[in-house]
Amino acid sequence: MAPTTDVNVVYTETTPVSSSSISNSKDDCLADLILNNLTECEKEQAARASSYQYLVASADPAQAPSSDVRDRHAKATIERYLAVERKLNKNSTVEEWTTNAENRLKKTLEYRLTNNVDDIRLCFETHTAESSVHAYLREGLVKRFANKASLIRGFSKEGHALFQNFPRADTSWEEEFYIKGNIYMLEKALACTETRTGGKKDKVIVLYDYNSYAMKNTPPTMLVKRLLYNLRDHYPERLEQVFVVDAPFIFRAFWAVVKHFIDPITKGLVQFVSGEEEKKLVLGSIISEDEASPWMFQGGKVVDEVDVNKFFYDTPFDHMYEDKGNGAA
Image (cartoon, rainbow, N blue to C red; front, side, top):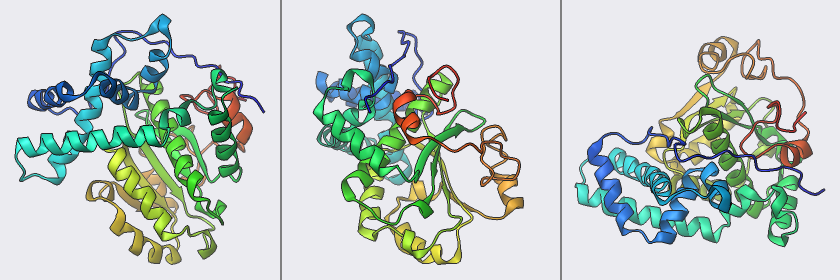
């Protein structure tokens, strides 16, 4: 099946850059210091990592953003690494923060090139239809999620995309697309948040539905470890919250192992939610009934099954499956 999605991004010089990770003018100066140490190529990579809309616009000569816009997006990426340094290394010096943030950023830029992250983001767009690289990615991603183990569906009341996961759907794991699949879904969620909020928000909410979970649904520990380390190292300050919903007792043993692979910042975002009363109180406070599924809390109105082909081929990368006017049913 050939891709049918057209990129439909209207990008202007005034498209906002989220300031959620920019705390004060001092940090802005530190970001400038790091920015000035980057090559032109690294600045471009950092800007593309920060914004899907920038990625698309930069590939179109008709709407190519200015260097000022590029630098604003690159600085937003830099600020996320500085934010992590502030939180994890409170007793370090400013020079240490700056050096560590710059080193981590450059490792991420190398990681994104090595793992073809931008190709993963763009592989279902029409202009990539004839590319063998993108065809390979499309085939692997559709196969990975044929069981609907993960979906990007719905928004929080503040506009954060909902990255939904269903562990009960998985019983086997192929390493390459276990990792690439998570990259695709997280990048799509970030793009949806950006488009939904006009660039004012830059994080996502992750939910795990552990209803009907069994031991056979537990992925290999080393594979989970690799994924968590990748997220820690290359997606700082990108999660708003993580909800583990209706986790059974048998999951606790798995959690006791994998929690040691989670950085302190992310661990602080994880919340276990069980039972209808608690789900309504916690999840109902941040997700409206129109955006929620019944497993999130009673009254959730999103009940239609997702057609995987439409999800991938007919829905623009930065839109939700149900968005009207995006080609989705």
